[in-house]
Amino acid sequence: MARLTLRVPDSLHDHLAERAKSEGVSMNQYLVFALSRIAAADEVSSQRAAFERLLQRYGDDEAEAALRRVLDSRGAKGPALA
Image (cartoon, rainbow, N blue to C red; front, side):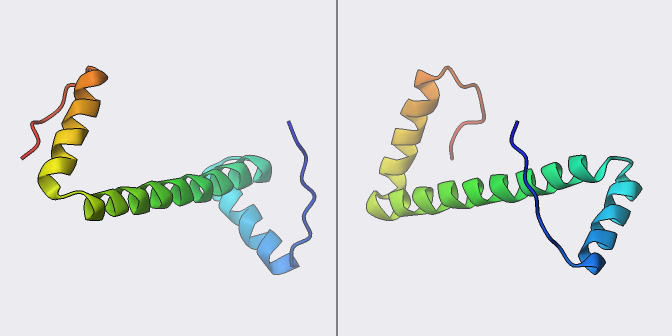
């Protein structure tokens, strides 16, 4: 596991310490959780943008058919695409 040393203003440190305390976790656990949420949100945003580009490149019908083929190849069970 890597270590990160970070200098932050006292006010931010106090705020983060209070948030961690209110969640009942260590500051380290809280910061790992918060940073993980940011990283995940960035990934979702990138995936959404890529999907939007695909929708623009291919029509709705073609995109739906391609999605259905991917889901079928994975054996995904889900609601029928409208």
